[in-house]
Image (cartoon, rainbow, N blue to C red):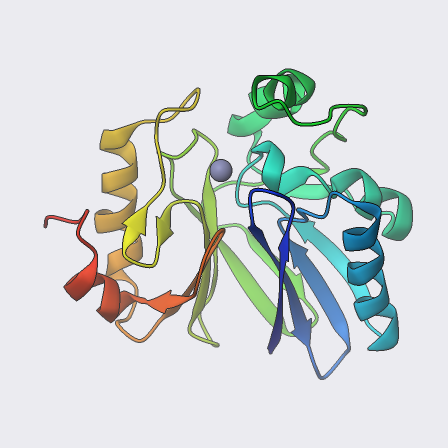
Length: 214
Ligand SMILES: [Zn+2]
């Protein structure tokens, strides 16, 4: 597995391209590309490396993580795998952008495949297992590649920080339960790729994350 990281849009969101090198298939996690330049950058990377995108996946449906969903649908014909518990953020996409005073001109596409705890999404030979981690939003999930020791955590946990819970459907109690009850129970050497900022690992967060008390 190879992972290419793009940092997109004014919220500095991490978009991950997860590549199965044996088949050249790839998955796109949280397509945050907003500007034409960002979209071209992502498309060029995929084309120049001869990749075939087979899945678009969303850790959650906040606007900074779904900006590029319409572009991915139009370019590669892919609708996102996401939790239906975040449907609210599709329905109110334009409103959310207005609240944050971001340009709002087009509606976000609907969820393509509704996912839940334990579902497995295949990118060639890579298996991404869905772990429901509510708290940052009701439908927040993480994608765990057990064989590769990697977990894409969205905005649930960051390096030495945790996701905010003051948006609609957020819950402080739930995010702490998701982190301590699920993510910190993954093997210590699991690499965590968050929705913003640098990657980290489970052992490091257990020792250094100031928000965790367990
Ligand atoms: Zn978010």
